[in-house]
Length: 278
Image (cartoon, rainbow, N blue to C red; front, side, top):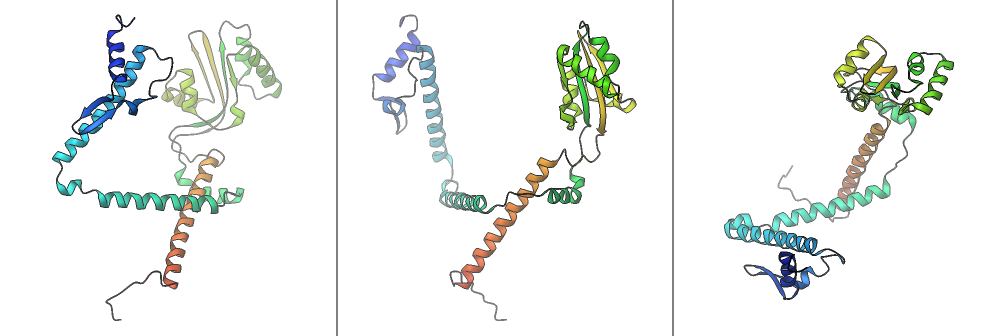
């Protein structure tokens, strides 16, 4: 087996039988550094691939580092301040994150959401139509296809009950999305039709009926918000809550910073010297 897989077996053996695996300048990769790298039961080919990839990645990083140290100016290599700034930013971020997690009020009232929506309506504009629909996809060979087609646009409860019963038993897809708003692009994509075609059809009528291949797609639209119009409150509720929480987080952090500054001033932990004699 090792003869037929000479590259893989020889490579693995050369790595595992020596202490030194690879060297880049003064940087050495030892066999102990790759112990446990290859899971038990891995084939020789895959084992060799895993080890090679690890060595290549290690070598690439060391070569890049060597080139950087040789070719960058002293000023460019002086990263102590950058590291200190990064450490400071990271520690401050973690402290503020912990403070927010402990102090953030996550309860949001319905009235607060509605007030926020009214104040920021202009930010909730739809890129494409939103619709409330009854969506049916049925094979044209189905015995129930024509009955469903004749009744799915009806507004009579008894007709819709028939459509629902027949569709649930014979249609490939039947849903009203719990009468939630759905992007028209989602419906168009499922039908394999261009969004612009669907938009144009709904400008003329309240339904879309397309036959493609062996399927008939039927979309009865009950409500529609056109592209460029403000989207409804209930469609944006999750975004509204996220925005409110984000605002609260920003206010918490601003208050924290202000309070810490005032406390430091009051307790002489912070002294500001000024040359202004006024």
